[in-house]
Length: 113
Ligand SMILES: [Zn+2]
Image (cartoon, rainbow, N blue to C red; front, side, top):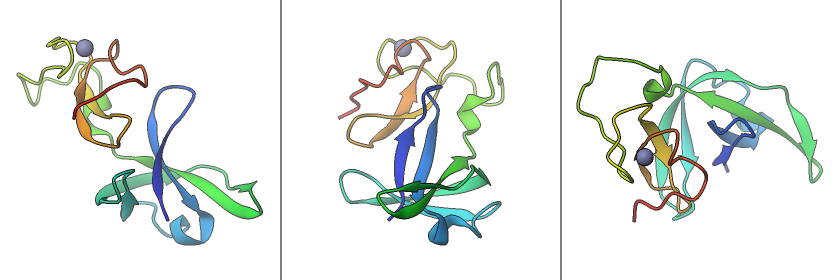
């Protein structure tokens, strides 16, 4: 099963067994949210596989369109927490619910529910 993980750098990645993710670079992967629902994400690259609990696991980096700071292509996107328009990007809250948040609010304690 592939799930979302937040890296130390504060970036959301997909995390799952290397056997499931090894061929997914450039393709789409199905990620399971904490709610049990699945969402499809484009995988732009894989991290280095590593062992966890006896399995070979890997992080898959996702096409995070909101992460290109200063993008003007889709104006009017606001942080759902504070309404800021600066550094707003697609984020996932503690329940795995996607929403838009600014970098200030995306501190790991978001709740879009
Ligand atoms: Zn905010």
